[in-house]
Image 1 (tube, rainbow, N blue to C red):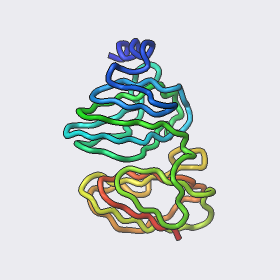
Image 2: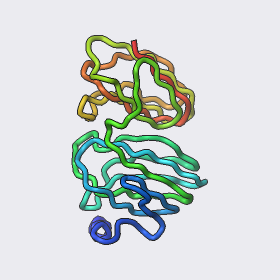
Image 3: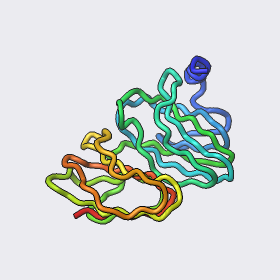
Length: 197
């Protein structure tokens, strides 16, 4: 199977059901394999999907092997996820499983939205401090949802640093932000807030 996927990566940039409308932005409908410029850097992918069935997006290595699961839900989806935050391996494509129309926008991790003191959102997101954290900082975190809720702190270079929260459903609590943290990734199915003090 990996060899078969690898063969497809050498051919067309994407299936007949997807198009690249501008640099780093891809649109399509249904299942697709989308080639992107090879990157080893931590990056973002902004994702939307309008459909009723299972929707998933994986990053793929040049070999065709799966690396990061950046979306996995049922029905409509809108969110931002980080990839290549663990090992820094090469990413060559995005594999989409969908029953509806979707968009993918690949961006450098430095494009994450700014996080000064308070951050709020709904669903998956990535937020960025102006500079790496120092000293003892407390995060007050809340989530209202039914599914998996997780918050990771990432280092200045976008690598995973520490798992701060890993729960299912509603959450309310305070945790320490490790010194040197620059980004936070949020996995959520509901509304959330993070306050830094």
